[in-house]
Image 1 (cartoon, rainbow, N blue to C red):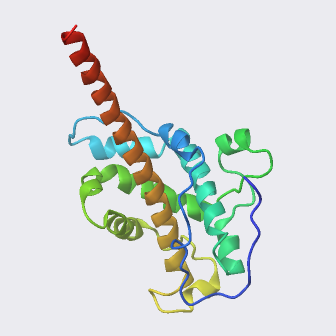
Image 2 (image 1 turned 120 degrees about the vertical axis):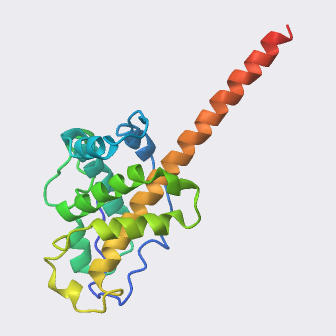
Length: 211
């Protein structure tokens, strides 16, 4: 990945961060595969197990890597220096990123990683939303409701506007939307591959039966 150039210094009233971003994972699907785990039957212990799993160093490492990918995408469309700088971390938080980077990968800030971890929790906790309309909007609302106030709270200019138009809200929303799009894209690809495997299996079975 190439280093991203920071754009103009003006801070627009509304940051339309997602509209101009096209999905082009370039291998992110394989990274997401690394944080997939076998889905267990629902039980009273599921939430506790999920919390333990999400707090593991391995998952945080992979989510931090994906967060860097999201930052790279968003910094290409944000026209505010302060917002761009708030997205980027000074040092890599992901060992996977350090291993794969040759100087071109962008490191996400702690705040971005926190949002992505919250998004991963929502994606895994509410699989029933996958088939509903406006699934991304519903997931984003759930994600935003779990974000602590201190996340992106250290940049003064973010709180100078109306609640639904300030930069902090727009950044949180943009990160959450991008993460959900990546995860749902991966989920769709995984399910399609599963259907194709079943179709292939039955095709071979039918051919065998008619020999």
